Length: 518
Image 1 (cartoon, one colour):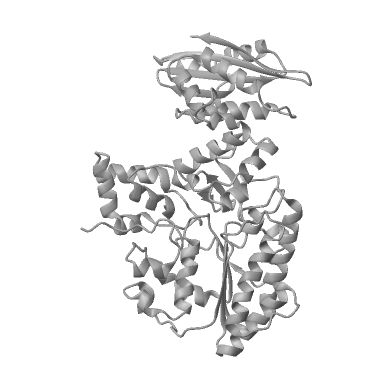
Image 2 (cartoon, one colour; image 1 turned 90 degrees about the vertical axis):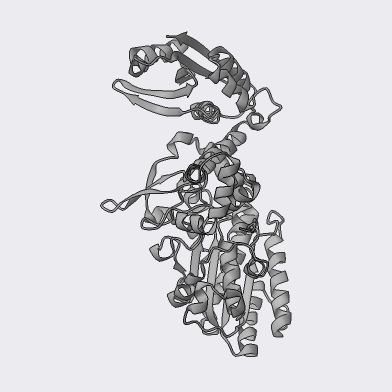
């Protein structure tokens, strides 16, 4: 078999088809989308195939049927007549510039005004958008198709710039609101993004927008099922398996562990991240490519500010309305984490209507924890720093709790001064431990209570109890009195009990600790 060509980072349907890259056929969704309605919205995580989906729709609206030869859409009852189309892509712009969004929209509108013979005049962007839609219809005699990609990037990129956020919010609201009044000129409008900012009223004027994000019929429209993976990429997986000296099923299991697990509706299929799969098969390595492609820090900063204990993120429950409700400055980070792909549906209870959310796979869990640790303590992700978390890993694996705690105490003492809480210190210790690559249990229940942290590294078990501005004796007494180590009485591994008290006042910060080997 000839070497397959993997379209890593490619988002243009025509280029993928014409140059012979692998294309996972999603064209069977074109007809259902057209039949669904006129104004459609869908959220999916970044690098999950939204841009390619819109590019595929663009080729269809251009009437380029030759590109669809052999694909599902070619055999469907579709109208292949070319029609006017407006495609707005918000991916590339730097929206931290005060007028970044306005400049981008100006550029798009000037191009379409020239194409459809529409005079710009001295009018607002929203009015010019209306004029372009009408002009395109009148020039061609065909209703217009409108494709808008990553509409929310002008908001997500500037969460820490509230004045620009509010300005962009107002501009987007007026821009999208005009589509409703131009209904008679529009055949189809599809808006995609990472999140639906339902609480900032962007779509309030476009109240006939049909959100298909949680619809079972479109659960698999982006991302790849395991059936698609093994059908289109069997050769690549087999080649990777041979390089790793594994059989096919073992390598597939590793790919599943790293990149599978996304579930966008309770009845949908588990999905693989397309970007990570393509990178893994092209590079012949299983690595965290999704995070390396550019992880936003706004979620990590929000979690840190709110004092959320990282293990509490996994296993959260919420209802459908909460999943779809995202607003600036929300105290609850869970809906945005779901919509951006950091959490996914793990279970659904029909009786209560509650979804249980978890990290979809190892790539996301490890990557998110690493990003979160970098927000708390940047030094821990610097390989040249004495606080690189790999050094903590060595301390734990080699049974050196004294070195681990001394390194931790020095690290915490150097944190920039601010109003830290107990949650900050607990979070940093948990993140360092979990990123050491060893099993970690947080708030482990026993018959007398629950320990703060239990870490399993090589032939060693570490049981932690944390206090904040209390006493070291209280921490150690709790570990002993509640017999946290009792469950390991028959375990041959070395057990260490570690009590820690974080001390902080306006003049000083420190960590006192005691270690007892059993």
